[in-house]
Length: 328
Image 1 (cartoon, one colour):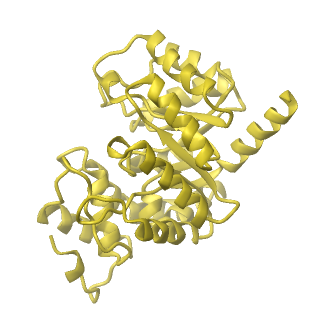
Image 2 (spheres, one colour; image 1 turned 135 degrees about the vertical axis):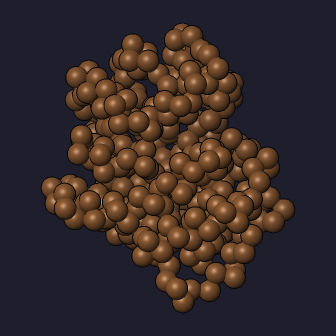
Image 3 (spheres, one colour; image 1 turned 180 degrees about the vertical axis):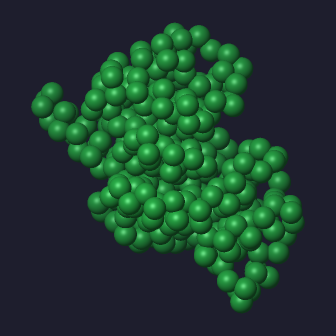
């Protein structure tokens, strides 16, 4: 049994290597999940060679406003429309540890290959180490598949795990990987070095979309990012060049990606990435409706203009493209 579990863990870690797209969830104008559009989004992203897996029910997938039934359906649709060898990781995000455990078990039954445990949003205010450990333990005890940690952005209040707490979390061998989203290079490198020292087998995915090239220079097994849901070919090109040590080519791809990453993730106001991702997909003709659930408002004309310019810089839009379909 232990040998079989070790083989499963090794296989999961190996399959995490490379680029994994954090997908969005298309909505109808009435804020219901548009299942055909979701299926098309999954099929489109995973058809790109080099996209090795998906993160569904993540932040880009509006996991904090979906019901458990909807999250299960997202996993089922992903499982049904992605290639059979595509690794599907589902996010788990709930304030209650008991509900998070119930959610995790349900998403495993729905077909997820692994689960990414997001810190509850209330932890941005404060949390005790014992609270964090108990939350992850409840999820571990409710599931059998491989589990991942999430390193929150350094700007997310108290949500990021201190090194001493991260050390405790990594010591649990049911957790085999981390989506490293510190969004700050020094914190990323500190966490990477700590984890490699504690568990060389632990998979670290660089997932700060704005500084992927820098993280690739420092070291990573790959990325689990929402940029790959919009420009999967460019993300694969960046990773392939970095993995081959072709840093000049990687820099050239990074220069195309950089304005887009800034327009989606950095420009004020904050917390607008999902709205901007959806507008990008609409501008590219891959999404008919860019609605997202309240309280998030639609993008402003200023935001859309910045996204249009960034997509042109990335080579994804030309002057002849008809953008009337994406009018705000």
